[in-house]
Amino acid sequence: MKSIFLSASIPLPGREYYGTADPLMIHAAVRSFLALVLGRRHLVWGGHPSITPMVSAACESLGLQCLDAVTLYQSKAFVKEFPKENDKFARLVLTPQEVDIPQSLLTLRKTMLGSHEFDGAVFIGGMNGVMDEHALFSQMHPGVAVVAVHRPGAAAADLALQLGYKPELDFMPTNFTQLYIDQLGVSPSDPRLTLSSKE
Image (cartoon, rainbow, N blue to C red; front, side):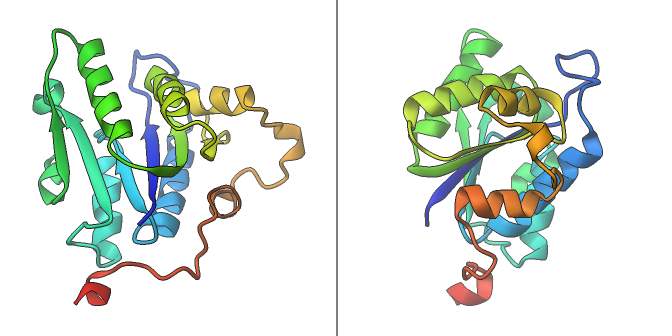
């Protein structure tokens, strides 16, 4: 199964991009992504605590309790902040805690992005880490489709503008599902890997 990387989070109070994001739109964009992609592509993400519960709930609602279709990466530097939903994922990869947080994050990202063959990446909301992950992803996987979702705001909105997005030309900025279909090449008619299809 081909892999797609998801970089998403809701900016935290006091952090960069807080106040520029629409949390409801971030949820909508992530949910649309999960509803389309889960079971049709292998999802890889870095386990932000605002996103992991959404992935867990979506997997369960789609009958993906075995979670063969997802791989969650987490750094041991954040073990005290792990959401309880981490325990539900069969494919949980823990990367080492380094001398400081920036180094721990770099190790996490290099391990995560270097362990799969990707044919797409999606960036939604987020803080400075979105920019860092996009830069590293583009370096490690040049030419692969990148979707930066503008409407929910935050870092991904700035990234979308940098990548050439023109808000004045987008007459359906909240049609997230169609955006993913068009740019990732995933179709709702593609078969979905579920528990029943594995049995």
